[in-house]
Image (cartoon, rainbow, N blue to C red; front, side):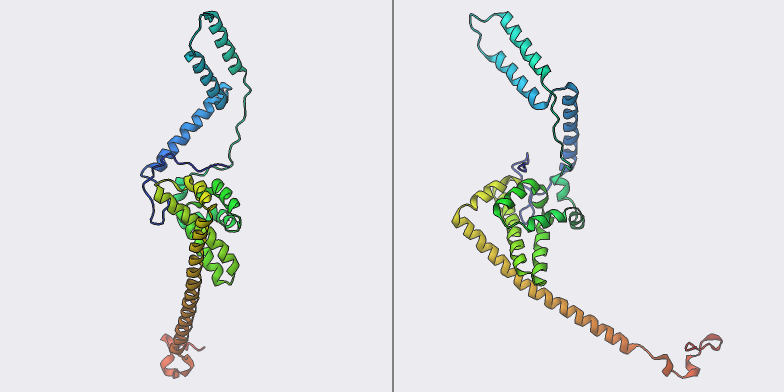
Length: 278
């Protein structure tokens, strides 16, 4: 599990619905940072010293240097201590850091078209849609927030809830609507605090532990559900109207069609005396 942390905690560019927008040149900066990080990892691997162990050794050296010396401390003791510290550092076992199977760049995800996003991450949103527990929703957002806390994910949840209601899956629609409002409320909270949405996942769910705040959240969910129900009726009516229009247009085309057999022979003969009926 990991918390989505943005170094730019004072993020000031947001979309109208509250989702953080990438700054100019941020994608390029992220790529440069990734290359630099790879070089650091390679350097640590070549030295045979894991990054965490190396940091601990450096801290130990600093502590030894900054401690006040006493009258009983000799230069030989200092050398011996320094030699011992270096020996322990060199003898530290090489740890293999687990590497993620896929590195998600939230900036790159935010710049994807809706079609590309659904092609690649629809399964992640679908999995989130089916979670009924708030605790599990929080854990899933902490793991997949770089995908779910995006404008495209919010749109997918909205359209999914509308589609479920139109297809008669009312109970499923209510759950999807709640999950949709979780994402939207996190985005709104992040916008009000001028922070990245990934940094307010835990604060949002902490607020949900307050009965009064949770009741207010559920009231907003119920209002959203009512709007979905109304829109589903309107959308179905629009679809039926469109179908009726298509039927009328096809009927009109059929009426306008001319029966060649009713045209006199001398009028329907083409060049060279050819009869289209033959």
